[in-house]
Image 1 (spheres, one colour):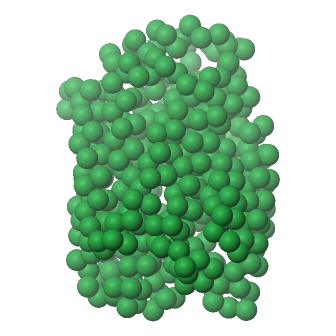
Image 2: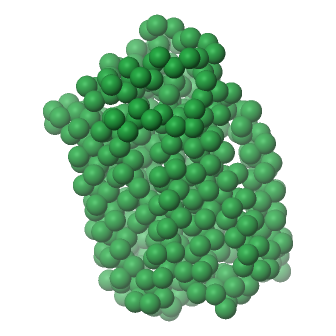
Image 3: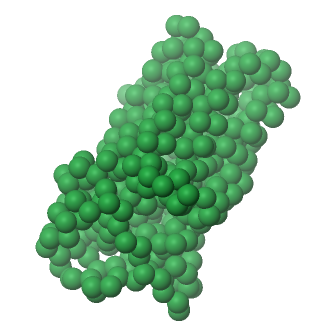
Amino acid sequence: MSTKEVSAPRPDEEKAMSTVSDEPSKSTPPPHLTIPDGGTRAWLVVLGAMIINGCSFGYSSSFGVYQAYYQLNQLSSKTASDIAWIGSIQLCFMFAGGVVAGALFDRYGARVIMVPACGAYVLAIMFTSLCTEYYQFILAQGVFGGLANGFLFSPAIAVVGHYFAKKRGAALGMVAIGSSVGGVIIPIALERSFNSRVGFGWGVRAVGFVMLFLLAIACVLVKERLPPRAGRLFAPEAVRQKSYVLVVAGVFFLIWGVFIIYFFISGYAISKIRMDTDLAFYLLSIINGASLVGRLFFGFMSDKAGVLTLLSFVAVANGVLILCWTQTVNQAGLIAWSVIFGFMSGGIFSLFPAAIASVVPKPQFIGVYMGQSMAAFGIAGLSGGPIAGAIVSKYGFFDAAVFGGVSLLAGGALLVAARFTHQPNWSVKA
């Protein structure tokens, strides 16, 4: 198996490295740390992480089906903003759970976290199928499901950094495909169940049973490679690394704005375009199907063009697309827009983990750096949906699109700053 040495740190990382490298560890890694960048074991880990991403992030990105269904059924007395809190709390706890999961991953590895998290996650889905009251959905689907989700999602992303350096963008792009596949299949499965004899309860439970089987396979495939170290919840020295701070701030705004579409496009299609309910629910599957292509494309392109450069471009493109969202006035236009948006938004989800990993001083510290960034993303996930829901309820979808589009453009500007802070020379890939 061929190996490649990890590239030397950028100037803005040196101070962070000098602090982190003195941290005590259970097992000291070799002085010249090498990363395989391929091989059977590495690609099996990618496959396992892809499955986890499909069951975790793919399920979360399907919340728009729940949003539209709850508005017409169990929670018809609640506003769009009220219902959006369920999905936003789920996102918040998914990202915030990564703070603890990142430190535990560095200390104990992946499996010891993921096995109990899989059980808890499936249990949360089963509890959701039994819910009838608003507070029950908040607790089961939002808090419990989101927290278990975070303990799956974060280690699955971090472990890829143990196996890939030069090809990390491509590897994480393939991992991100999992959430697209989940985002295509899950909304269709839920919609078919909700509108048939199966019904809400058994439809949700069926999804839970399938996830139990898939996650069991993933837990066998995913295994850490680097020796454990004393994990921490936070690495305070990271705030002195400007490129890391700018990347986290930029991705915060991306998450703040992009999930507006995943939450509200079905509701927009039904109420404004007068689209058939079945077809409106399929819009999420269309977006996630196009996102699959985008995640793979941008993941591979990032290894050639540079992950920070490409993510900056993708952020701006998505901002412009969201600003144009409500200008679609018929079914054909909205479907075409969904395909384009799905492709471009796929770049966000495949590139942002690689962007964070690209500015981490050493690969064995990816867990804690990734974990603490999830705390910020949790705040974005918690607040973005309800803010957009309140805007929709009071002003309409156009104003919500402005909020989302401007958020993406602001994130793009911060990522451009991060790119030049990390590598000032435009001709050098970053």
